Image (cartoon, rainbow, N blue to C red; front, side, top):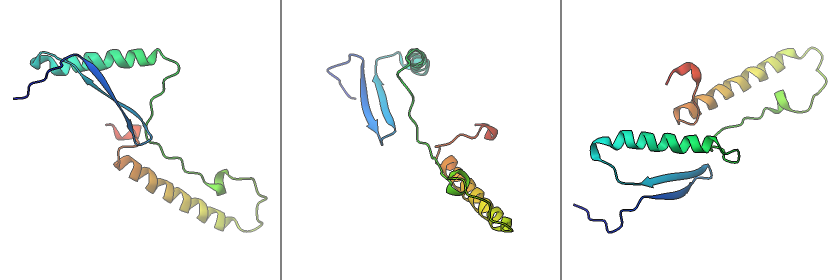
Length: 115
């Protein structure tokens, strides 16, 4: 078994991949109450965070910019709507693929998927 000389509760911090800070908490609890104790502790911490206007939660996000859809306005090209429609379809396909990849990686939660 492992013997620790210092058993005081503490919080360790770690910067995670430019996304934010990971908090790891060390504390003693009754073994059969570990899950409920952890739940109560994290709920109290999150409640306190909610009261702080200068704290925001960080998480990986993707921002896809479409110059064709969001860029500077250009006058329409007469008789060339099919190219624009094709481009919009390609952009939508790419956006769907990126969103699917981000969802698989756990970076995006789609409400319609029911986690």
